[in-house]
Picture 1 (cartoon, chains in turn brown, orange):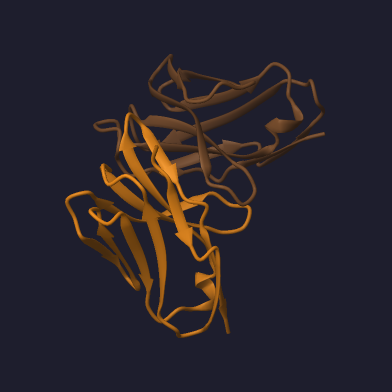
Picture 2 (cartoon, each protein chain N blue to C red):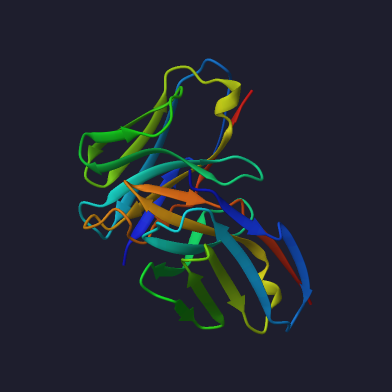
Length: 114
Length: 111
């Protein structure tokens, strides 16, 4: 069966510090991978998606970047965090044959920027 | 621009009651609709996926329906239990790897 991991679970960082969040998927090959951010009381916002190693698409201009160094690893980064980067970050995967397949989510990372 | 709305934003019901959660979307050109459950501070758990060609899907006490032409989906929960308390989100896939989420309905089932 497939499993998706995210770490860390929670993170408190000062403004201006760097960020690295990691997501790994087990039990599937060549998945589509996604990074979402969830703000309190609002729907999820798609930040990045990837259809393969090194292939990253950004949905919104922002202070963040993403990378996919391995087939089942997806990393969200920032060089200098802003207060507005605080939120709940969720990684997800779907079957690669089609973009609209069922999405499965990880446990999330709660980021607080102070 | 596709928008997804979930009404009500919050709902409190006594245990054992059957209930319906609503999801509406503004553009009927969707490929599928997915219902999720989210517990506080946790990730999303997929409940049901309905393809655009389907009318409904069932899993245990859950039944989701889809009426694409009217831009509506409902999630029916039979015989609700306190363990069903969570936030329920619907999401529509519009193509190009874009999924639009509603803000969710927060459900509380009283014992």
